[in-house]
Length: 134
Picture 1 (cartoon, rainbow, N blue to C red):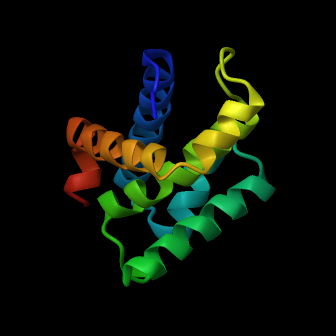
Picture 2 (tube, rainbow, N blue to C red):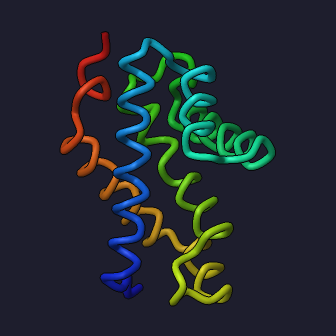
């Protein structure tokens, strides 16, 4: 799958913003569902999609064998990045991305892998409370 530089930049900017908000919320002492809710509120995600993002994050945590309530701060961020990007692609896609391409991305393991690698890179750039919780 070819991921354009525009799409890469779009994803990087969203993931970077997500990481920075997570860092701020974690620094304030909020984790798990309460922290997630504060992050999504700051990012302007409405309640219904917020619930879907949280459900997806918890589901991925369960599949990984680590209950959501036991995830480290960085893993809370990493496990939220992909469903958050899916939400953004559906609700506020870049101007050059049509619905067919969005559908293709949402169903692509390669795109999911790209988002995971990008999220790991951004988490290492931001560090802060993601890597050293208070």
